[in-house]
Length: 138
Figure (tube, rainbow, N blue to C red):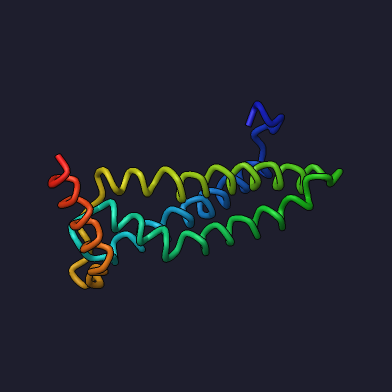
């Protein structure tokens, strides 16, 4: 907040509380989609999660950014503070949800829910075929 020129006062603290909920939202959607994808291959589950919900998360982030970006030119302290904090929240939160979280889930993600949907066989079959081809080529 210091780098953005924002002091800690009641306006900025209220905005921080709102921003925490907003930033968690992006990661929660990606994480939930990862958990409902079946299969044992975490890379495929992370890819399917991004394919299913990634565009919606990105659209939500873009619409929030555009709605708040209008306030960046405001002369009001409250609106200027809100817009700076929310722009930073949307940019950082969406990048964590769309870029960082899927990478972490593919490396150390949890097992799917017991009620998770069955894995897509064509994706798994293609992956297995490509692995078999690579072994045969060596």
